[in-house]
Image 1 (cartoon, one colour):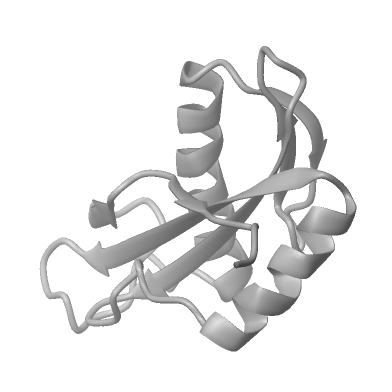
Image 2: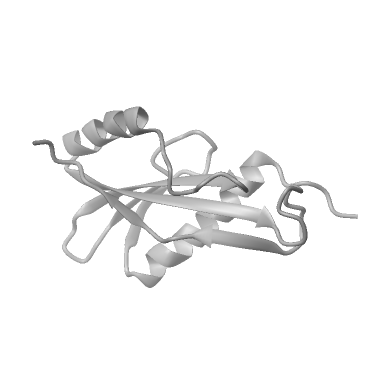
Length: 125
């Protein structure tokens, strides 16, 4: 019998999904932090040596993975601008494939709601 995934395991699954996309897009990893609640999860550079802070947030059905706390994001954008980094947000929605109201189980199928990386503007008017 399978057991329910922990919050840390759900977060790690989301990070694996996002990390694979970053690799496919050609980003180079400078740092990875998979500890739940620590931000950013990825620090990357692109081919022009621009730094990116990547924030990964996992949510369960029926929450919308594209929504994030605007006040918290403003604080993080200020931090990124002091480091001359750009911010990418990756909201990852996961749900049980059989019944969306049930939790995700270890080694069981799941459905993914992921729109890809979102660029968060860090400049101010």
